[in-house]
Image 1 (cartoon, rainbow, N blue to C red):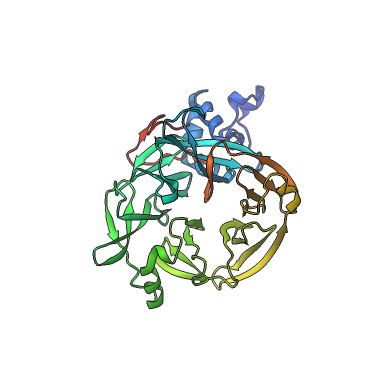
Image 2 (cartoon, helix red, strand yellow):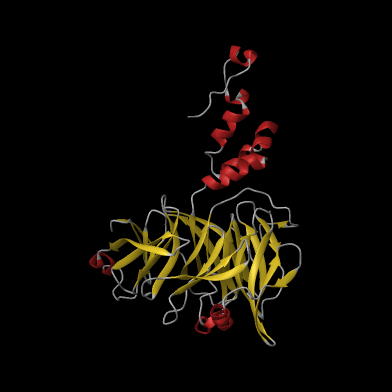
Length: 392
């Protein structure tokens, strides 16, 4: 039960208005507002600005923000009849509780040959309200809520593969883990954001079998799509390989394995449900998706939680072939069906909640989750509204 706030005698004699609320009560009210409203409140008065700028307020406010799944897609610049060969590379966040889409960033540049899978744009990671993105071999750290941007070392990615972003321990230090295969063989590196420093962390302390497997790098593991859970980075293995998730412990900065006790299908993804690491598992074009929970993280005990079955006839009214994908996308077990032209949102019982169309093409439902944050960062940064064509 919340403690009763006793007002001073002089304050109890006059009518209580929002202008003379105690800071404790004012803070609790402001915590209920979304980030955009908080920024507007800072212009009301000095007291409101001080309250909403205090780190003691900003951290719990960040924790209260709804988790939003990140989507990426490309969009042709100009009308359908124009031949500009210019694309917008777009990043949006969707809150499946309200079906609201929020545009986070947009890079504008030349078209590319998608058959070669050489897109110049990638979202690599999301952590504490920050997005790590690359465009044309340059790496950027962005807070889309405050519009703060930072170029991240290394400045060129021709020989590097970004593996993830994390906050190291209890410090305010953000670090980037990446993989480099050049010279004598593969190496894993860490760079500290804003410092320009890097160091090799080839996992000598890991088991011999794990070192051998990690040396194969990108061929054995989907290092390009990490899932951040309880501060650790997780990568799914490729189909046909070993049924083991690679885990990077961000506190001790070592690699280890996490066994998966079932055969993975071609549509598998990681997420967080009920405070546990979870994994969805399905086939392309299937009407069923299984959800597993890692009940005991330390002892690697998985339990089968749900099997969600969707109405195929309803989906085929819009998607004639069987090329759709099923994704469990929220902590509530919501399922997103991604077809060629339409996307369908179902609840955990298989009830259709919403259908919509992406405003571009080549939609990618990333494993990354954004929780908006107004927490300022100490690293030198630049704040702007236009970068490589613009952010929205």
